[in-house]
Length: 212
Image (tube, rainbow, N blue to C red; front, side, top):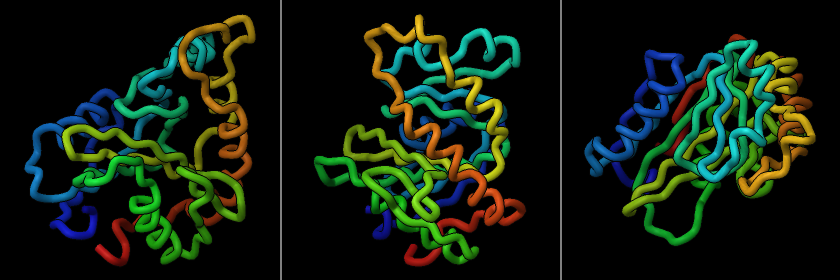
């Protein structure tokens, strides 16, 4: 499990989402399985869609094209998210022994690290982290052959005007067979950003924190 093996920390040198998702998958598929991994990374102006989503239904294609925002697909499920340099991403890769997704095991060390910086973060629901009830982090997982990839976002200084515009497709584009994002989640993340920005801006995100 996450706490019973040696952990290696890896910080990506790139802000290219294609490189970062490829690096994440390489660590998952190719690096030694006798240890756990923590990867810290940021993407420049990118929409990341979930494994099962219809990309066209999740983005404002005209806005994305005009503003040269990259669009990529991740291995895990869940909703579409916007990344820019005001958002820090973290990925844990470890052994997976259960049959269900376990989000709390991987969110707790992040919460501890943020608490050490004075951030009153907490786990809310199945896979969100919040500050005073407002979402600033969404998380998803991918499981394969006894290993789990858990990745999440830490929103602290994203350009909210871009977030709302890039993830706001026209109503006539919403009829599709793909899985839609949950609308409320995107707006909760935007409202949370004021709190997250004041507390996290300029602070180093210290991971993995206590207990590892």
